[in-house]
Length: 160
Image 1 (cartoon, rainbow, N blue to C red):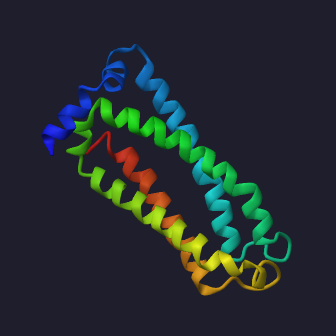
Image 2: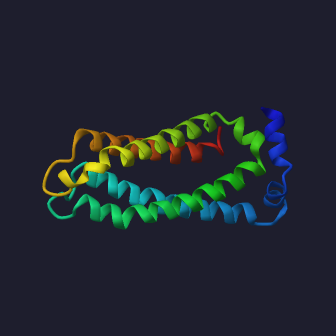
């Protein structure tokens, strides 16, 4: 694997990130903003799935307003994350936090897919005034845990 990570570091974008003054720092800033725009709305939606505000705000309304923001945040976080990763792929991959961050990203993605392809399809039955089903609540807990873990592991990449 180290030869693959070494190859990644030799790519043009990786070289540009390493050699252009302040580019890595700018990418970090955009990455953190993207993460905030991703995780903030995701947490708010998860809290709604857990029942917070169920008498006031339908799940579909929360989703219609919050999830597009989370998608935009994900795009910015993913693009900047990839650029930062390739610029130092060998050292980042050697970090003890890297496999956990990747695994948690996979868990978050699978959770999103399962929720939207399954539980969310019958949201009309539990959109307002009733407790969301256990499957929706479980998806919210998994989402909260996985995005928290991704954030923590991302910070630990610099220290492990």
